[in-house]
Image (cartoon, rainbow, N blue to C red; front, side, top):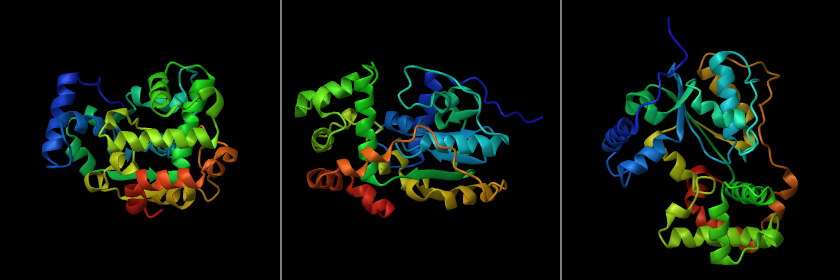
Length: 277
């Protein structure tokens, strides 16, 4: 009888070896085995191997995991969990990757073969709205005095003078946040650029992942039906995307000043080119 459960996760040495083999299979794509490992950690898949999802932070990844759970197991993800340290507001999908129902790609025996045999799925988002969402993520962390992202908030303040008490959810704060990201990329300090505001092309690496389906967050409904049909599990016409930790539109594009727009266009130029925004 087939099982929907992955075996216990491998040890760190095994993960490192798998990442090294994956990097070797894609010459020139990764600067190091550690970079390949980080990349594989951002891809999830089920034990069935039917699909693989390259998770793009701040681009409906929580909602997509809810959808994929429903398609994989035939029922919505209704098992709830509360985690006061989960800033995403959807701890159930955050912890889903620790349940052995979904696994990260470096936890499967042969990541190259697993991705080759799967329907490869990813999501992308308007770079401006994604940048605003990432900024709001940090504002929320400040408002809650959370330990997560404390160092990141401190780095941004030290370099740009951003005052989280005054500049949260304000255009001036967004500009300083973007100024920090721009500096980090120019200085070659990508170690200071968190996944939540890293370029989407760096998370997905379309030349490596080669997605079979790429959905835009701004137009998800047609994509949902295409993925379901490709997996042989069509959705009813009345299906509604399972929204998770949705951001209010009131603090979206209205925060983007001309100065912020210029920074976004420079920082995320590769995203605009790759995904047609």
